[in-house]
Image 1: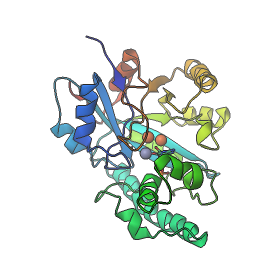
Image 2: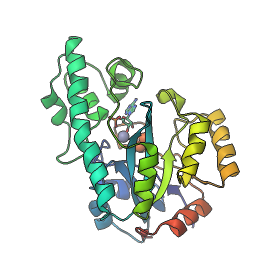
Image 3: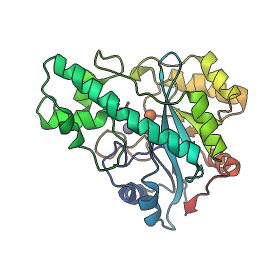
Image 4: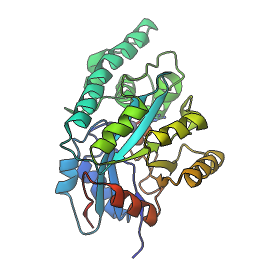
Length: 284
Ligand code: AMP
Ligand code: ZN
Ligand code: FE
Ligand code: FE
């Protein structure tokens, strides 16, 4: 049987649109055999995903940890197979989710100042209780208000990282996130590090410093990396003996990304599983 490994997906416990169990079911339906659920700063979806465990799919549970460098660059760190009971990592995710609320109020305030009619309640109306708040929920509110036609237009016109309305989220540094994930027995993979179309990106030198800080791997196969960026990352992976991964960054109907559109090689997943001490793959 052929193996298809997708190590980056979101449910409606953050800014995806499928329930966690639906992500699992939809992944099985398209032939994915190994799936990581990686909601932003949350493990709230793990249980529903586990409730949908099946012989058809191996679940590699994790989260995508929001980070900010000391010079205010946004970085995302995938943490896989960490201990969900680890208190320091839980507290860090809780703190980031809290900070996302103040941040959203400030973004909405800036939009209001520019004459755009939106209030924070409109944003909350788009958020599932307890889910991680993010710009996609604001985008959904703007769609409801008729300000834009879809999430993509909202990001293009108002919400992208170079927008005057943008505010980064207050979150741990990448170095801290790596430490937190690894102390919880997990594996730390930096998500889409060279995705320049998203905004300002980290330098190769800084990425090298994260390797010294304990980074385990790099997500290379991702929609937002062009060929040149993938090549540059392959060089880094080879030079430092890092794990290379790929994932779809599926968000249900919230984004065009299709499950399995970018994947991870089996031997790379084997390295992740061998290194993790916090949690094991379930099902499959
Ligand atoms: P935040 O977590 O609030 O910083 O928002 C970032 C999220 O917005 C990421 O998960 C992206 O997947 C999502 N995003 C970025 N650009 C777009 C876009 N053009 N359309 C839909 N979602 C997007
Ligand atoms: Zn997202
Ligand atoms: Fe990300
Ligand atoms: Fe993501």
